[in-house]
Length: 530
Image (cartoon, rainbow, N blue to C red; front, top):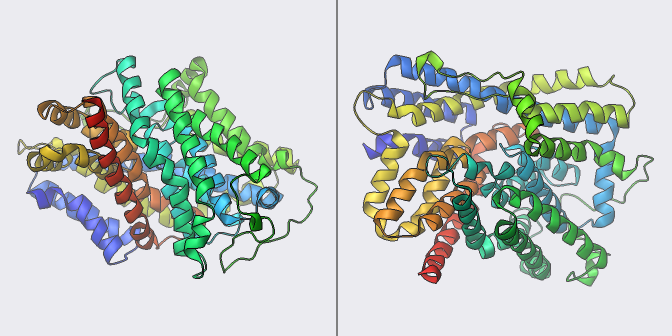
């Protein structure tokens, strides 16, 4: 039965990662197999299967809405020339792609994660990287890998607040788990800038002097990584878990810009010979009448609106209450629901910022309708791929509503793993979190699914519950690298639909490596706390 329960994990890896099928075909086949096995082996009733399919289709809508907002923003910025001006700003700060990777993918993406989450960061940062001269494949992989360390805290602490709600709702316990996350990630997360630069150089750069190209920038990358991890630790210790993923990237972004301006810990030749890939030569910025502030205005507005909507309680309540398109108790099942607060959605905020950006930058809304029409037409294949992916996910997660008296498929897998690996559970805990995110596409949902069994195993094995739950959250965050529907969405933004298998193969290695290092860090932290 374990192989049947694992179909939702094994099949995407084989069909996308091994056979290189497109997400539409690979996930379509996976969804069909999971539906059939759910019906015949888990004895899911036709009404549960139907409710799960309807839930999946509804859940696809808010994700597609975020994708629409991100694409609308990108294309409006292209229409006004703001993307070119942003490109010029980065080039003037540094034309070196290694530094741009850290600034855009890791730090700016981390800030977007802190105020939005839900897969938004990679959809925003990947197009920016392409505008800077990165290949689409490089942009997608770097954006996905970078959206891991910040995702443990997600949008203002949502993975802890919601993800751990089945285990505890006590603020002091959540703050302690948040602190444990930063302790686990103090050294592992600090390596992320260096890892991103290494991926860029080894997979997408010139073949000559690869090691030297990495080592010359390693001191600066480690500084940025440890500043990020240090600020995260201090934020969790003195402020609280809700704002870790805002304070850490914002503070580190300031430090990174200052160090680049002062040329501190950077090689001397970087100014005159910035590192570029062979495919793209460094471009000399062309003078533009648009100021850098005006060019960045829509992105700054997105950050401000997202932060205000998540932090100002009365505003949040209004946005959640009105235009709420959520669907609860689908076909009468109280456990089968789908949330879509339209006004609260990052997609709405991205669309509003894009419209206001047009007014500020072009003083006209004339490009809006043609741009929106072209965006909608480009999203057809993505909608299908996302729909079949979520059908598989929802049948998998709702499989506890069966007539065979079996636990749900994810719980069956978790219990099977725990039975044989309880002795080394601190090493395995992040992998279970990553597994949940790989299938469900969410740090929060993975934690909501597996937090209770993680806590039970920790208790039975006399391990620190807070450390194990922290490992679950960090592992789930690392799962963002390999999550299929994140890959589908980001690929669509940059025009790589059909290349999802190739992307998955590239992100799988750093994803598994991250989880392993967190497991080792967890083992060390348990011994320090003993």
